[in-house]
Every structure is written in C-alpha cells, then in structure tokens.
Image 1 (tube, rainbow, N blue to C red):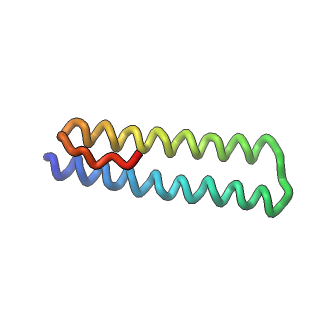
Image 2 (tube, rainbow, N blue to C red):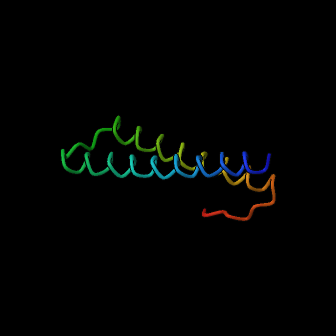
Length: 72
C-alpha cells in the first residue's frame, strides 16, 4: 500500500512539473505576442494554482506514509 501511495505522490510531482512548464510557456507566449490580456494572465494564474495544489496533495500523501521527500 505504501508503495502505491508513494507512486501516486511521484506522479503528482511529475504533473506539477508539467504544470510549471506550461505556466512558463504561457508567460513566454504572452511576451512573444506582446499579449498582456487579462484572459492569458488569468489562465496562467489558474495553472500556477493547480501546480501548488498538486504539490500539496503529493506532500499530504507522503506525510500519510511517513516519507519526507518533500521538494516544496
């Protein structure tokens, strides 16, 4: 069971990393297009919130099995 939980936490970390990459891509795209619209900024904030929530979920899972491999 602990291995399953640890595996899920690892997958959440991978998802958080991809969300971080997506956030950077959104920001770079906005700069390249000189697009300062609220819509793009709003989307980037949502992606960043999702990343934080994903990291928090991974941390909670690791706490539940006593794994202290928290990177945030």
